[in-house]
Length: 523
Image (cartoon, rainbow, N blue to C red):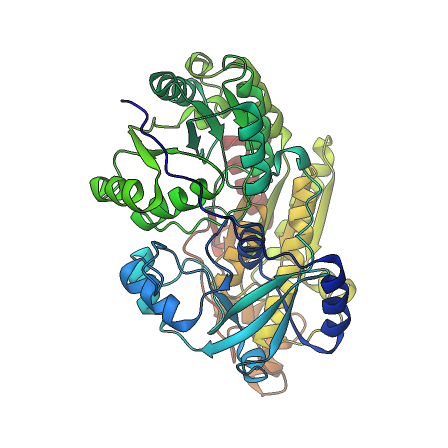
């Protein structure tokens, strides 16, 4: 392995307006249609504005988009394998026309950029997903229309964390030049690094006589990835183990796409913009030879093929496997333990679902009493009727309003869980998709236990103390679950309780036994 002569840096696109022009745009934007950016769009915009996505000067127009999807190139032939598009809703799309302008804002309404609209179109997103991501559907919810055009930057997105590590391409290039770094190997870890990753990167940089840039993405990443705050603390911890002056850490606000071969090529293009000459990739990638040939010829970045270690050290550490200690550094292990203490010290959510009258509230109240008897943790009961009275009093019972109600419960429960408490939720929660959204809110901040109280409809009607089922049968109550509105039984419940042959106390004890077995509470 030897370092080749790197191609010259390409000029970086800089789309930030002058101070005078920014004032003009801020004034003009008061009269423009606005779009609040999603998390992915927020990341894409930052990298377009700072030149991380050079040579792009905005979001792709239709011809460039179709060329990228088909050929992994812009219409002028420039290698660019991933479509960077601004997806918008139908209502916004119908108010735009070629030649108009769109104000792009962050979730707080701050103007970040103005898009000069060139085209609006409705893409075939299924075909895009198949061509780019190799799947029938896009990985995330995407709006149905795309709008393309050039950008004028007003203000870069603000970040309040790890500011010294958030360097733009121009800033990082300048640092490399000042330090005399050349060649430079980039490595994008996705999880905390341990000894295997350290040894691999050290070997590569030594053989090349190069420097190392640890360059993790801190934008939108894959589901179930370790939270980036923990990752960055672990990268900082491992950095001190490299020889002095060999390695540095910088963060990139990149929304990863899970696009396989295309993503590897895209990573090389982006790292070239940041000043790197080499990029470590997984030797097991499909078409790895073609990736290496394309990036060397068209980008000027040499791919370093490595067998990526099986990164199971995190899980082993958190399970208390003593053999994992020798696979990492004590400083990294300490950070992981601090971020992910044992289940018995972490918060969790118990989420009951089932028909009205199934017994959810009764079981939940018994559980609440049991936890209060044990002590040691704050416990909150979010019962369906109580939440409706105090948190969602303005909502009706349409599907849209039910979803809003469950999302509110899920958000409150996730905050309780995040801060080490126990949240007991007992709504009907009839729709599977929203239950999964609630689970996703809690994943990463604590535990989540879905309990399906599977009491049959006829039994629930017999127990109907409030007469709700009877009113629903007579048509006096609309959108009543089990009568005029569907209930979608969960297939991912940790526990299924049928209360026909189970008393409420026995059901509650079944839940407690499960929590003990899984380590959420101590025996």
